[in-house]
Amino acid sequence: MNGKKDTDSDITRRRALALSGVAAGAAVGFGVTSCSSDDDTDTQAAASGAASAAASGSASAGASSDLCVLNGSVTEGPYYLDGALFRKNITDGKEGVPLTVKLTVLDQTDGCTPVKDAAVEIWHCDAWGYYSGYTTANPGGSAPAESEDTSGADDKTYLRGYQTTDGKGVVTFTTIFPGWYTPRATHIHVKVHTGGKKADDTYEGGKVNWTGQLFFDDKYGTEVYKTEPYSRHTGTVTKLDDDMVYAGGGAKDGLMTLTGSVDKGFTGTLTVGIDPDKENTGAGSGDGGSPPPGGDGSAPPEPPSGQPSASAS
Image (cartoon, rainbow, N blue to C red; front, side, top):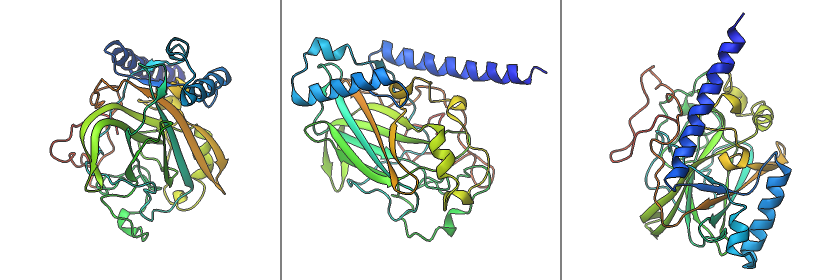
């Protein structure tokens, strides 16, 4: 009789943990600024005005900074790999519903002005829930083995990549809508780097200013996962309200605005802010639960040497 109350209490506790992690991040000055929202008209309107004013150079520091909400970085998860390639199209032949990811990076310490030449790095799982480099990790439910994928994708590089921001702070990636895996809601990982340089088709030096995750309203996954090749992965998809990383704050916690359709593909946008003088890898920030088990029921492979381990995937 108390099952629903117990479930609601568990979700509330997880949300409180996530929010406390965000507050702690903000207290030490590590943050993300977001000025747009998928479900908040006032916030979205403010974001549009701030971004336009910043891009034109006409916004005053005091006025535009009031529109920026400082938020904490979150965990990078256990599936990060060094050496992602500089490229716009990161699919490596992976099949799925087309997705364009368009991010705008702003300086939250300087009136939300655009950050030029920041290196934005993203990575996410494929349509069946597998990450490149970690293809033995079981995504949960019932999914084809990664070896059955005949797309020809490189199993070390697919769905990973860098792009650098232009003069308006904008970066664009061509990818596919991510699949799902237990126990996480659909998401994309992202890091913003500054101070380094492109070397041998990847990024070296500098520092990580923000580590975040991009999320999707549940309604999009509901439609996408009915189509091939996603439909070959069956099971229970984790909803946003049950996710241990997404803190429920809309765009300020990474919820992207999406336009488009399953048939034609989607474009996801988000505006994020960084402090170019701060460094935060995100390791240890936020509570993401246990990562999915390996294909043999064991823990997933350890991250490559030198990479931090984290509790959320």
